[in-house]
Length: 68
Image (cartoon, rainbow, N blue to C red; front, side, top):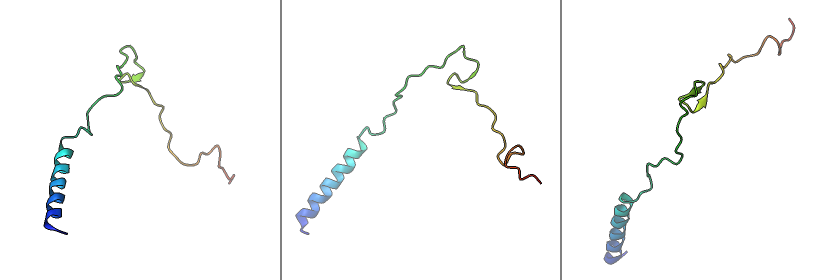
């Protein structure tokens, strides 16, 4: 590779690094403008409904019983 090709390659590399620093690829915008409902006591922070308690996992005694 000639000296001129190496120079052009380095200039292009520095130009690309410079342009990546000025790109706006990671903008901090909020797409959904959601406001929580004030009069919703059964919602978690006004967004999600309350969940039901999750029972412990494992076989139940009512089913999967062999009958010993």
